[in-house]
Structures are given as structure tokens and as C-alpha cells.
Length: 98
Image 1 (tube, rainbow, N blue to C red):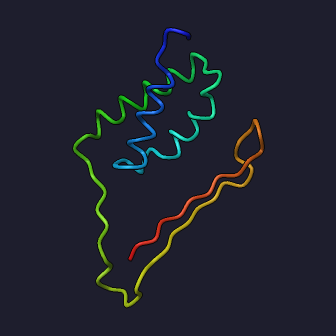
Image 2 (tube, rainbow, N blue to C red; image 1 turned 180 degrees about the horizontal axis):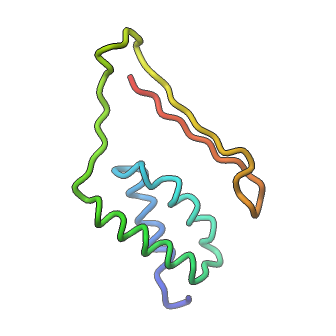
């Protein structure tokens, strides 16, 4: 694994997740947990994610107001309580549409 550019790939994916591809943010964050000691399975997951990005290059996310709602904004959230089997940490996220 020393010759594999795992850190560079995860760093590039982190940039994409924060700038243009929010749909991969959870996966990239999970892969970043193994930056200090990645294994072959982690590298295969990075390659799988890169293939996903190549296959969805023409897709996009569109945010638009709901014409049937009088609300100024909507907020959606989700949480995974204790979902990490290694540490028992939870994961949460939210999005606010204005």
C-alpha cells in the first residue's frame, strides 16, 4: 500500500465533496478515517467511488423552491446513532433550502 496514492486520492475527493459533489461527502469522510493506515479494501473503495463519479459526471443537483409551500425555508436532517462499528460514533447531516 505504500506505492498507492491513497492520501492524494482522498484529498482530491474531499475537495470535490466540499465544492461540487455533496452526494459523496459521507463516503469521503468515512474513507478519510483510514488515512493513517489504509488497507487494500479502502483503496478498492476509493476506486469504486472514482468509477461512480465517472458514471455520474453528467448528473447534477438542483435546488428550487417548492411552489406549493408558503414556508420561507425547509430543513431536512438525518442521523445514524452509533453507526460506526469501530468507535461507536454517530453521524448526522442536514440541508437547509431557502
